Structures are given as structure tokens and as C-alpha cells.
Image (cartoon, rainbow, N blue to C red; front, side):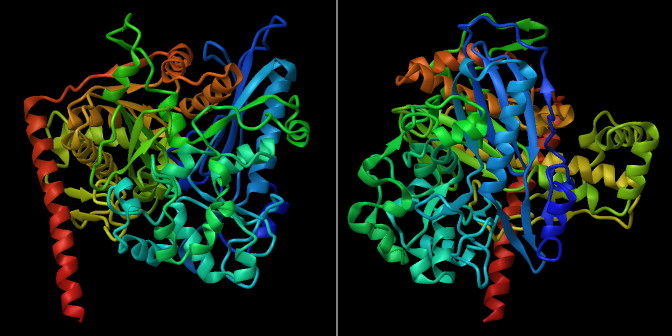
Length: 611
């Protein structure tokens, strides 16, 4: 962000940058460019656009899935120094960065705009608000809320709508059956209800509400068609049944019904599309000019970023012991592959032929990715963010930074060096043995799955009077271990409800953490498949949407073939814990589960004592 941009936000709020400590677990890919493309006139290319928590990325992708050029641009997030729950962004800022990134990949790859046959968008599941002319509407509490203004996104991580979520969860509506029994305050309807409570009714009536991926297909095409992914997964559109007027009336949002037109939700006349289906007539003239592309270029119906990560990973073959598997995976195999998109937070996605209802896990969502198939979505609200928090708030963090600088190493490498030294000094075989008497519970930002309780909080049992870099290294490893234990909890909940997950397909910044990935394999006792590039799987999934739209693909089998063709081979990490470590991890998992019950009981005892 420029100095001028920084000055404009100072004194109003704190600003999070992509390269801030908040995003340490996600690697930037600035101008990752392959050699200039030597292309024939008929060579098709596709552009994927990935709008993450702190950046917008554009990648130019060939038909075989090779990324020819990539550019990433930071976006602005506003915080409220008086309210830690607040996270806001701007569609205008993000669109400007998207346009810059797309022009850069075209210029540096030497690919003419006419060679780009389709583009696809993914974005975070954040709430975007505009008027019916696509002008942004302010969502910041205060005198300007509901008026035109740039701060028009309530970010996914924003937790202001806790009371609204509690009201929704008291209704017993059928809507709740499709979100694991409990609606998260991170979803869009609680946030819309919060806006209604804080906005002048006349201003509220001129708003239209978008899950963020749908806003950008609207911005690109001028067509207000929405995606099944966004409406079903985040906006309470019930699979096979549509909107539920009685639910919206009961929670106080009856005006959204609009005599069955649902105009503020953008789905009048049933205009909801599966992933990758062409939106409108493709790029509008204005969007094409701003992006540097050709008017009418196909635009695929969008996906939430985690779902794009699923699309960009689960069709991969993999190498094991240096040997590439020769069998191409079938669409049916997708039922056994859980995608984990792990950055600031982590989303867990698995597909099934029939709807599987899992308590505390979102879904089942029909048509969210493939027509006729169902998806379940688990998640952890804070993983990469939690790792960063544990490291940067420790008193030894300045020493760690200085040592990393002197040794020319990443801080994670230095921490592993310290752990290795401790392992030798304590005469143990593994880091798990080093920390066996310390128990870490990781829900510092509430629990998304499978407890679905935003009131859950973190804890550490077994603390000592120590603040050295060795103590920081132990706590770092404990954090990785706790995230792995919670991943096992989610996998078990899915399988006990009827899924049959036998492998974990990773993407996102955490996939480059080898120690963490081995912990996942050992703790969950299933192989973990790492993508060729941890940072490119999501944007690759978005590019696949562009190809699906350009080729008019409508059948799941054909979509899967595109995914298999475009997904690079990954690398398999097999479970490798010794019997001793496996017993330790099983014991720690048992204690992990007991910690949940204890925390709930303690909370109840305090609440009873407070009355």
C-alpha cells in the first residue's frame, strides 16, 4: 500500500497488510513469471483470479495446468482499535488490484488478450454490499453506515454478529440442518441482520448483498446471476428447496423476500448457477477495458476460495518414494479425498454422491462444486493466524528474529534447530516426546467444526516459569500438534457420520511446513498429499472455472476430466509414527477431547454462579 493510502487510514483503524505478521503462514508470490510464452495463434489460455484475506492474485494458466505468469497485489483490511471483532475491506480496492495484476500477467507473459478464452473468480466468503448500480455501500458502524462509501465488505473473520447468530440458532429452522445444526456468525445472514439493526430502513432497502465471489462475477459481467456455492454455503439457500420465507420472516429479514423476487439477494427468477457455468454474456465492455481483456470473454460462475482449493488439488496424482502413480483418479475417488485449504484459517472439504448430515460441520450443500453432488465443509477459524500469534507474542520473539537474521534463516527453521537441540539434550527420539506433558487447546478464536461454538477458547496446561527461546520452540511445536489433533477430530466426525475419507489433500501456506504435514499424517493416520505448489492450488482452481465456462462443460465427469488434466502431480507423505509416538498421540487426542468437555462444564458452572 502507498504512503498516501496508509495516511488515509491512520487514526481511523488499524490496517492489516498481506505481508504483516497476521499472514505469516501464507507465502506471497509477487510476479512469479515463467519465460515469455512462444505461442501459436490457437493456443488457449485461462486466467484465475483469487481474492484472499489480504491479497488479490491473477494467474495465466495453460490448458495443461501450467501457470505461465502470476502477479499478487496486497489489499487493505481495516480494523477497529476499539473492537477486535471488526474486519472490513473494499471491493473498489480489490477490483483495482485485480485489474493491475491481470494486466501485468498479460504483459510479462507476452500473451495477447485474444488468447485468453475464459476467466474464473474465487474469493473469501465475505459479505459485500452495494446499491443496485453496483456502487459500494458503507458497512462501518456509525453515521455513514448505509451511505455510499468504499468500506463495503464485512470480512469472513469479522465476528460482530454474535447476537444475530444466537437468534438465528434459536429458530429451529430447516436452514440449520444444512449448516451442521448451528449457523456460524461468519456466514452472511447474521451479518445482514446486523446491518439491518444498525442501518436506516430506507438505506437498507437500497442494498443488495453478495457473498464476495458472486460480487466479482457481477462486476466483471454486469450480470447478477449468483452461484450455488455462495448462496447455498453462506446465504441460507436450502438445497433442493430454495429460500425459506418463514425463516427470514422469523429472524426479522422479511423484506428480503420481496414478494418472492429476492431482489436484494440477487436471485430473482431462480438465477443460481453451478460452478464454472458461463455468467451472462461474458466480460462487459467496461470490465474488459479495465482488465485489458476482450469483451465477451467467458466468465465462469465463481467459487468460495476454499472450494477453488478443493478443485485445484483433489484430482491430483501423486509421487510416492519417487514413483508417480500411473492410474488416473476417477470422479468416484473424490469421495475419499478431503481437501484442506490451510492459510490464516483452514477449510476442510469433501464431496459425496448423497447428502451427509454431520453435526457441527457445514452442509451438506448440493451443487456447490459439481452438479448433482454434495459437499460438506469443516473448518478451523484460526490456524496460520494462531501459529503467528503464539510466536509473535512470546517474550523470546525479538531474540528469535535477531537469530534468524544473523543466521540467514526463516524463523521456523530456527525454531526447528532449537527443537532438534532440545531433542538431543533430552535423549528422546521425537519432538512429540519433548512436549508430552504439555497440553494445548487451540480455539483462541472460537470453534467452527465440529463443535460449532464461537465461545470456545484456547488453553495450555503444563506451563512452567520459563520464557526462553527453548520455551517458544516447544510452544510452536505444541501449536502444530494441536492443529493436527483438531484435524483428526474433524476427520473422525465426518467419517462417523457416513463419509469414507482415506487421504488428506493440502494446499495453502501450511503445506510447505514439512514437520506439520508429517504430524497431520501421523495424528490422523492417513496419507497427506502435498501439491506441487502450496500457493497456486486455489488460483489454479479459479482458472479451471474459466476453462469450464469457455468450453461449455456441464457434466460432472467432464469437469473432473479438466481437473485431472490441469492438476499437477503432488507428493505423498505417509504416516510414519513409531508405536511409542502413536500411543502418545492417541493419549494426547483423548486429553484433547476431554479438554472440550471440561471447558464446557466450567463455563456452565460459572454461568450458574453468575445468576
